Structures are given as structure tokens and as C-alpha cells.
Length: 246
Image 1: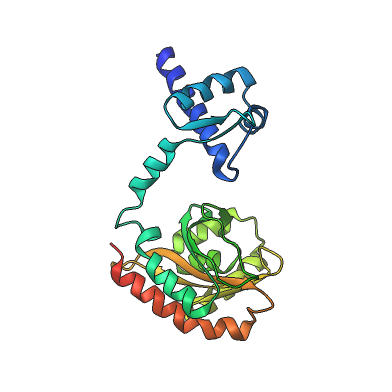
Image 2 (image 1 turned 120 degrees about the vertical axis):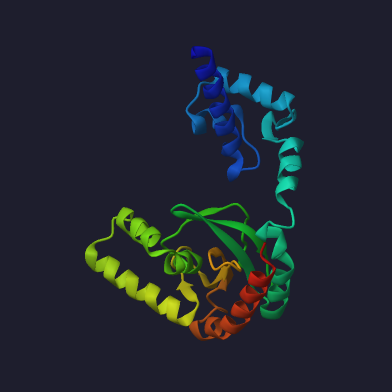
């Protein structure tokens, strides 16, 4: 039994090490030890195992670690025809070409949203949208789209856990009601200074909320009027996504 527990714990630690690379492409031994809270000798042994299996590679020049080829081989299996990140990519590219701003696709994971796909604008000054970034679900255009169109009990649970006062919840609910009426959400510098966004829901053909589709860019180009003018194109793209969702 103890051996089984130790095996599970080792697997958890190895996964914790891999998760250190979520937002950084290259890390040293000390960096990984700090992030995981493990001692260096333990981290070194686990890194050696992961390296042997191809999940981690070590740059001998910098003595730092990166994700290995096995990660990309596994990731390649995600990118199937049923995956929204790939399935909706042509529609996102067409939307980017039409509006000439950065287009992003988000999915919900609990109290967070994750950017799973992005197509950047061709403009010199543009919204850079790294894939894989996690953001809080309560703020930002896409976050509020999820909140507005979630099932009521899910929404209430997230609001209860938010720490908002009753007055703040009532005001927030008014915003969500307006989003449901309009079919889109706007945000101006809510999460990131200098950036604005508009987002719409993407529903599955069976009616459940699948994702949030957003267009973002610098506030100098993304005024309230301009974003509102983008709404019809976004809704049209979201409807196409709904039709091809599997």
C-alpha cells in the first residue's frame, strides 16, 4: 500500500514539474524547485526520468530544461476534427481577415477561462494572445459571456465563491442580463491596460455553451462604437461554429 502511495506521489510530482512550463518555455533546476516546493535532488531525479521518456529535454549550453518532443506528440492527438481549437480555426482566420483584429477562442475550466486558440491581427500594433493562458471568469468580455450564458446554478455558485457583496452581485447580474439581451459582451481595460474586447457565446448544436469567441485589440482602435459594429460579424462566425461543432 505504501509503495502504491509513493508511486502515485511520484507521478503527481512529475506532473507538477511539467505544469511549471505552462507559462515559461525554459526553466532551470532552481526555478523548478521553487515552483514545485520540492528539493533540488528530488527535482533532478524526476527531471532525469522525464528526460529519459522524452517529456523533457535539457539544453546543455544553458543547463536549462524545456518540454520534450513527447509532449508535442501527445498534443497532436488533441488536434482532431472534434477539437474546437482546430475545428473553428478557419472561421477565426476569416473573422480576423474581415475585422483585422486579433481573434481568440476560450473554453471554461471551473472559475477560469482558457485561451485555446488565437489568430493575431496583421496590424503593426496588435493584441498578442498567447495560447494556454488562464484568466478569471468574472472579468473580461469572454469571462462575462460564460457567466451570462451558464446554467443558473453554476452561475450562482461562482458568484457565491467570488466574495462579492450582495450589492455588487446585483450590479453584476444586471450586466449579465444586458449581455444575454444583446448577445455579446464588451470590456475596456477590465483585465489588461490598453486593451478592449468584444465576445459572443458559441453554442453546441444541442444547446449547451461550448466556448466564447472574442475579438480584441488596443483601445485606440476598439472604441465602444467600433466593437458594437463588430457584433454582427462575430455572431455570424459563432453561428457557423455552432453548425460545425461535433
